[in-house]
Image (cartoon, rainbow, N blue to C red; front, side):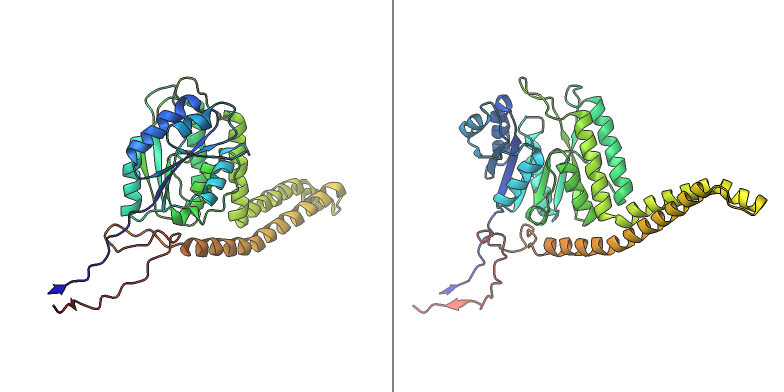
Length: 345
């Protein structure tokens, strides 16, 4: 009697849903239930960001795993969650019920089947209350800024609805504290040229009794500052080169009367202007030199990030082989089939 050795059936990937919440008691229960229906096998975490209402208890009663982060800000919450939660696929959304939980299954399937590192749920709204006109304009403007800085952009850079691979999460050096975290995640993926896709998802108005924590002007300025800081760190040659070019151009413009007077009289009579222009040219040259030096440092940092990204095993596509998900993402050792075994009876 012959018994054939069969390869073990692949273990399904571990999926974690992460919902940052601050004073979302009226909405968090239905949000948890909606994601539970969409992803029944997922571990569902609600991170209470120092709420002053009953958010934590309501989420716990709804069946979520509740954890807390005392430092206010969505960036602080996600930095903590990415460090603490161990999974193969991470689904990020808000706990206010604005994102369409029913799309999570399709977004997760797309990430796994196409071996992507990020799927962004692009917000599509039909209700005026869901997405204020100022936020639409700001989103479009920042998308164009990022596209200009990094040669490629997203249609909705600030969407909080994302599905991420373990490879992305464990190689992401999160430095944001607030709502600029979405821009930082987008720029991280664009910089490393990670495979990603966008999917249109419904965006609804907030549940009654909750209000947006986003301040258009304050958070807009913080996001712009963060984007410019990342430009300085990631593209220093362009950043400091532009400063040097502006200083040099201004110096040349200011020096025109000095040169005209010198050619007419043979003397330099505007010594303060001449000294100022000389100083500006020197500063411009120094700025350009700093940009060139920091470009090498930035390239080394990029290579380090890339190596960190590649050190995390990729999620296998369905049917490509078994994977041991019990060892923090380690690949299962290759199985050698010795052929059919013979049992004598």
